[in-house]
Image 1 (cartoon, rainbow, N blue to C red):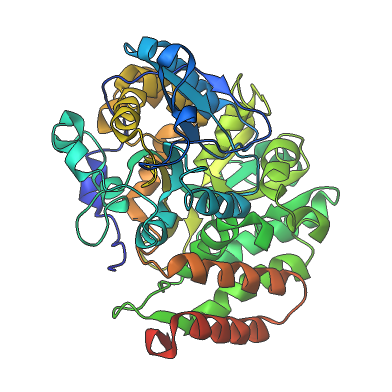
Image 2: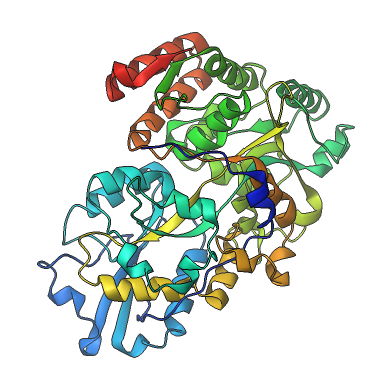
Length: 473
């Protein structure tokens, strides 16, 4: 499959203030199941009784990762309450409480059986190629033929590409995207005698800042980046790929071969190694567990115990009044700097962008109703509230001009990062390669030399994708 191309700046500029999608109705009775069990629709056979709700209503189920915020749950409940067809449908909201990596594994398992497959599933778009290849998801192309907002350019183009398979089939409706940068606590910077309008130009400037913070504020963690296997994609995309792409290299070369060993891979690992070797990072007990990201964003950063965090815009959702860690002062206490390229080379800064989509499992037996409900969830008014609550960037271009949305703290600057955004490869092998990235990064953090970690990565990737699909630079 072809890899995602860099988003053209001209295209992004026209959609600087992103927006949301509109839709039509569907219905459901919001019933939140306990224990995170995924109960869902099936194919032509299985769960016949379970697909009938109270009073003969059609029952559909929706599954997503419960990351400690109620934003998604509230979205689906509100969508049901405003759904014009709710009298004929019952909705089973079935969150899965798990780390990101475990969520993907549990969803993959659920999608294999008609007895456990939900009718709607929240998919990280990087996972789509492998789930499509496995036959887990429904091709939505026919449903989209009369979906006005899908066909009139309302949805942000690069995100449409992200849910489109190599043959042109579509397997999800994107509902959020994000960008990443260096979040920093201005109070700590002030205490360390640093400029509170910080914008480093190179990686070395980032490290120099960490050194000053360690010397002037010894009780503060200077720098946090997700660095363990338990952090899943946050380690692969948010840390390693932000660094690697900042060197000018990508995961795949121009011939779509996986770069298994290179000077730029080593440079990226050396940066991570320096963070931990020099004592700029958190203790391993904090960073090598599945809650690392939450500890950084919900405890350390607002608590004045962390100076700089390499993280995404979505993090601000924690600080809303309805978030997991309300912090009314965040808009004044935090700063955001673009992540610089390694040596300050063009384009000067780097961000990785991703997103999530609403998909319909192949084994759902209520596909028509599920798609109708998805359209309603993505309708302007319903979507506007949730994208603000999530602290994410919208996937609909018409939301961008909404003053409630565009006035959100840091929205304009973080959206502007999209002009240089890169996306993970649309390659079915990525879901395997990414696990090797996580292992490589964690091994460096745990004391393995960058050279040895890269050698193991090369071996692992070669064994997984085949020597003919790898290259050394």
